Length: 470
Image 1 (cartoon, helix red, strand yellow):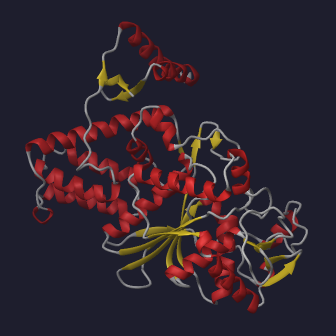
Image 2: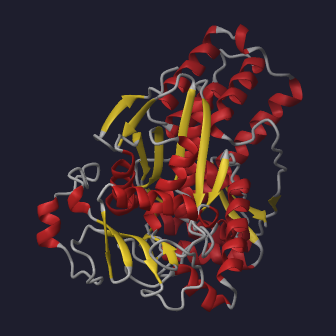
Image 3: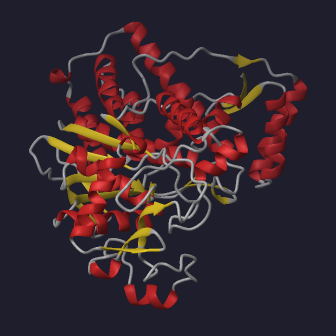
């Protein structure tokens, strides 16, 4: 099976061809562990999970590295603002080391609950300071750095390809740049490779270096760790679209300048998960965590199903109603699979009937065409509703599809927990349906919250709306 991916470097859909036959080197930008991951962050890790599962489904052996940014980095990607780790430590009354450990564990727990496969390695920044120093020294030896104000900077003017993937025009950057806070920079695109104590006198995480006691800039960690574990030239690098103009642009510049060769063949980026009010932001507060959904009575796999319903390169708007619909659909799916399992066992993939083969081929075509998960869900439901497919084949193909979808179809059980609806409750449910029809979402949300405070979740299903106890 040939996997076709949209490569941000070139903005084209192209067939994936590994550097080494049968093997994939995959690097994914991980979390900065100063707070809980919000559900927008988790969309990125879900996309990367689907990508990895698809590559393994296609027969590749994937070496998957994800960094954990447990070194403080600034609230602005362009080297400005406050240190995120120190800010969180001050607000929570914990040390920066305890903050990093606590939120690393919380992140891993969230990914486990979403059935996201563990990387081959979590690479923690604090354990790779020497690797970062060595890469900065290589850049220094090659003439790509300068020291100003006690800090080491990457000189972007020495790298002609700077901003190529992000489609940045250097002339426009020069003339249209905002006021640069760091007056030590020679150019607005230059960025810090190493901060010293002259910059942050009370920095909690510091290490000795040839340039003085300090700590690394954010961008250097991904370059140093990916090259250490995947080599100076590897297959795929992933992240959110917000990483393209600064973080990934800077990673490319310093990595290719240090190693003198192309760094990454395929760049894959996911779009944002939005609320009705726009993009979620930790710095502005008011974001939703996975635990927020659980406390509303949802299973983490309901959120996984919801994310599968949107293509990773399209913006996806989160609403409680859409999550309720996903929860209902997933419950129906598990119950359908459960009823099949009661009466038969999975058949053999090698001896599928023609209709089952056709359903699986459709799924393979859609998942290998840039991870078209919404079409894949439709393929799954088409399979289960197809009267020309035997129950044995339905189970065999559904479980095969689930190697990519990750919905735990073969192991998950759902009990019918529908609660009896009183006449008064039914009037509220009917009022909510009418409010939604009239696009009065504020009133619909108010009614949902009424039930939520009483310990119930409203679930919209094809058979109508019902109450489920949390």
